[in-house]
Amino acid sequence: MFRHVIAPTRFFTQISNDIIRHPRLSSDAKCLLTWQLSLPPGADEPLSVSAERAGIKKTAFIRAKRELKAEGYVHEWRRSGPRGRWSTTQLVSNVPLTEAEALAVRDGSSTSAPPTAAPPAVGEPTRRDVGRSQEKNGENTPHPPHPLAERGALALAAVSHRDRRLRLSGRDIRSLAPLAGQWFERGATLTDLHEALTSGLPDSVRSPAGITRDRLVRKMPDPLPGPAPAPPPLRACAGGCGRMIRPVADESHCRDCRVQAAEAAANTHNIDGAVEATRRGMAAIREALGGDPNGGPRNRLGGLTGMVDGSTNM
Image (tube, rainbow, N blue to C red; front, side, top):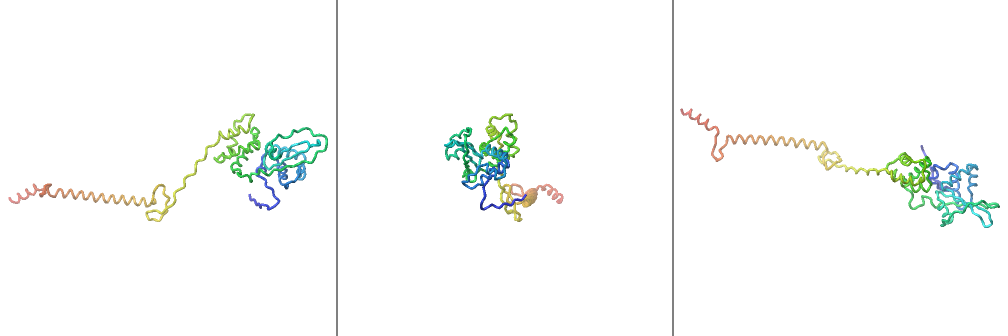
């Protein structure tokens, strides 16, 4: 498959892969969220108007809005005005936000509880206010997420989507993503992670995030072995043959040169042994035919010589 992408120089919106590949958001929900995030700063366009402009029907819009609220991309509050009229404040974010985080964005630094949803008073509602947050984009943070942590987040989202017993919120997935990333760092596959998290689960799980964290830590694969040491560098054979060798220990000669040297040493040893044996034999003969130990001549054949001489004299 080939892809040809030219980065636009203007009129573009940064959308994270988490949104594009989100397993629990329908195409209508992604389209609605992307449309809202593409609006210029200060634009006051309610979600229903964006849906109408994007061609999303009413039923599909209700479902898409519900999905975005469930995943933390959309937050909504109703509040009563000074004249008894009710208005709706909407917050759209490019990252999932908890209720407390959304309130902090809405109010600047306030973490007060959201207003209660009382029945609307009689009267025409005022125009909706739309709040949009671009402040928590992962690309602008001083510590962007590690690639393996992003992969871990996608894996956890997939497991959460497939097994309803492990339904995790966006905040749970972000919290557990580094642990899941360590699994991939240690050579685990998505199948390994899925089996470790779902095998033997009870029919009802009271704390999906808690049991997921426990299994991620307790069943963590062993670290991969360290890299093998680098091989020694090549060097010229000291035997003068011109070959290059990679010594295993402290070899300085190639195999052929070592064999030749061993054969030459063996031949030299054989020649030296033969010469030494000859020397010992000649010494034995000289000792047999030579003088006595006291310095005078000694002839072991003297008796025979005397007998020969005596017979001659007769």
